[in-house]
Amino acid sequence: MTVNNKEFERYIGRNQISDRLNELAGQIDMDYAGKSLVMLAVLNGAFIFAGDLIRLLEVDAEVSFVKLKSYRGTASTGEVQTLIGLMHELKDREVLIVEDIIDTGRTMSKLLEMVWEQSPASVKVCTLLVKPDVFKNKYQLDYVGFSIPDKFVVGYGLDYDELGRQLPDIYKIKD
Ligand SMILES: O=P(O)(O)OC[C@H]1O[C@H](OP(=O)(O)OP(=O)(O)O)[C@H](O)[C@@H]1O
Ligand code: HPA
Image (cartoon, rainbow, N blue to C red; front, side, top):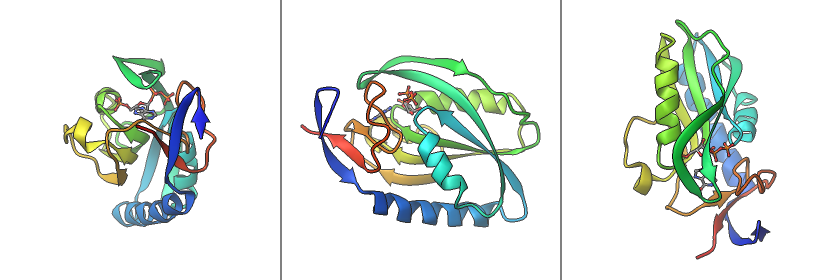
């Protein structure tokens, strides 16, 4: 499969993703039982994951978005730009940040600072994917779908130069 002239191979199938989402939603429902949460999803990459996850939740969940950007091609520019900032009142709220991937961890690190400044009651992080060899456990991740090797991935919301987001499965770049 080719995206933007690079070759990718199927890596995590849609059924595996769906099974894992059911497990994550079950854990979130248990942890937030009797509470209501604000799901803060990070555009663009997390739009599909957040949409699928919220439909599996039984706890009350509001949704809000921020848009952060740092990648060009397959590499981080090192600078995280805020294209759409926080719009939701987060003071005293239980905030669940939802990301498609934590790679270097820079985007989430910046977002955690932005969110904690609003004096929320709690902040937890839910990411579909993490690259542990790059991220190196810089801070706590509360819900993780899959730990993956340091290979560029596309599909299920993740892009390579804006393409590939619509793929129902996740693909990794060929060596
Ligand atoms: O851990 P990091 O190294 O910071 O990488 C993770 C971030 O990179 C991607 O966003 P990107 O900047 O590509 O924007 P997008 O969500 O619009 O694709 C992804 O959606 C995460 O937000
Ligand atoms: O592997 C990746 N794929 C797509 N977007 C990303 N943003 C950080 N890492 C990745």
